[in-house]
Image (cartoon, rainbow, N blue to C red):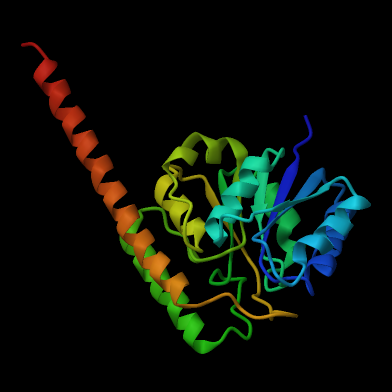
Length: 252
């Protein structure tokens, strides 16, 4: 059976990017003869992003736009896209050209043997490009927090460019809070697997519009740290309790 990849594009005020973004991704995937769909999840952008996505969908059934009017936030938009997707491989990218779309086929290929694939700016073949220094320092700090929280080591846990198998996501989807802006960070905290691969890429410059980074992103990141650590402590307590029960049930 041929794999099908669902490319998840969460959008907000990306009217100037979305058409070129979709056309670029389509061209790359078609050259590699890949089976795919593009899921666009728009959070009711006032600039008409959804209307542009609808126009694109009229000429290609593989483009599937969805409009959210009661929810907002990157993480919940991504998981909303997962719920609507029909593929067995999910790949998340931004619509602003900061992610290297030419790497999507490599992520898809690696998902054949791995549960999660992270496109990393910090791997040996990755780079931050012209990333502002304060954001680079923030990313490095978040990575250190990740090293404290998790045993599986990933160089760029704050990446917004990553892939996950459908089966892996839905086996743990009930444990996600679906809030904030760094869904990969939460996925790595919940999904129990060591089958994780990385691929390097160079972070690009936004071609149109403004960055969504604000204090809300920082707040939800800190909230995610507390939630993930609490989840880990509960899991440890559960395992310890079960171990004690098993010992008590052993008869001499």
